[in-house]
Length: 202
Image 1 (cartoon, helix red, strand yellow):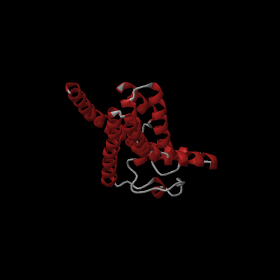
Image 2: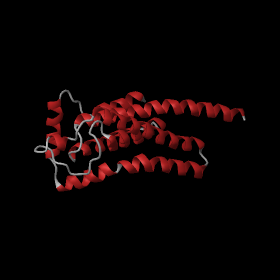
Image 3: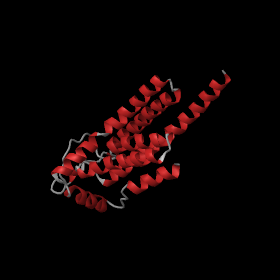
Image 4: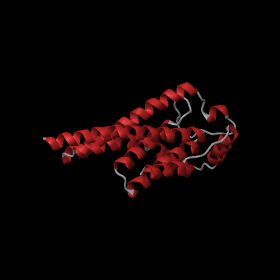
């Protein structure tokens, strides 16, 4: 299972070996912008909130309705992994203090969407991969894993297409989000096992 998830991350991530390669790749992606593509990827980039916030709410509500305690705990796991990833991402943003590409290269990179704080790592990508990794670990089926990582990777690509992140920002965000979820998953796996044993004794 872990090999499958790692494969998706490596396949859809963008290897960056130098600052020149970083900006050169971004220029190619950003320069391919079209109005139709912009509309599509703006929608994609904004969908991170639906996945990162809507999915755990949906799991929680479904768990309550079905009286499925495991599903309810899964919703807590999703929220926790997102929070852990967000805290680490914010900490790294202000630690590295990297300016956005459209600020550093105003003549080469065009910004097509709103951009918040510092550039490294990508917060949108971190949240997307945290969500995709968590849901894939909890429900390890190919029809869950494939669309989850395709969605997360599309969000990462959209951040470059729209000119607000370097490829290295996206790569770091993907690894950070996935790593946060894997760590959180092991913690909750222990808690679920402990809870199940307690229920069996009752």
